[in-house]
Image 1 (cartoon, helix red, strand yellow):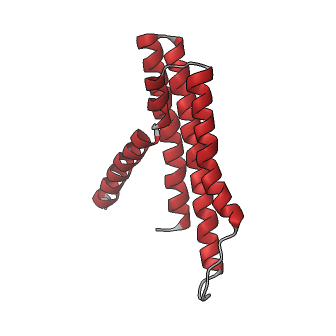
Image 2: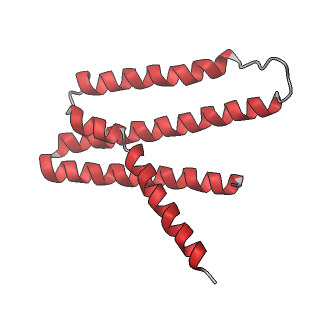
Image 3: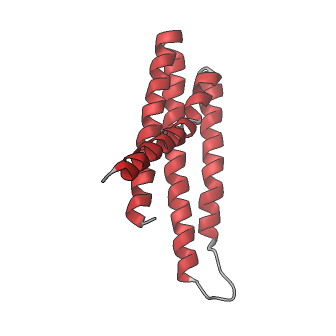
Length: 138
C-alpha cells in the first residue's frame, strides 16, 4: 500500500467519523432533545481530536524508528512519551469536565466518543465496494 493510499484511508476515516457523529447528534436531538445532541456532538469532536493526535503520534514514532534503523539501541525522546500519555490525561480531564461540570447526558456523550468505530466500519464497506469495482473492471 502506498503512502497516498494510506493518507486517503485516514482522511476518509476522519470524514466518516464526522459523518457518523453528526448522524448520532441528529438522532439524539430528534429523540431526546438538545442536551443529548450536545453531548453526542462534543463526544464526536473529542473522538476526532483523539484520532488526529493518535495518528500524529504514530507517524512520529514511525519516522523515529526509520531514522534509527540499524541502531543497536533505539532512543525514544521523553517528549514522545509525554505526548502519547498526555493525550489520555487531557482526554480524561475533558471527559470529567463535560460529564460533571456541564452535566451532559453520559450515554450520548459516550456514543460520540466512540464514533470512530462506525467510521472504521464505513471505511471497510467503502474498501469492499471499491475493491469489487476494481475486480469487475475490464
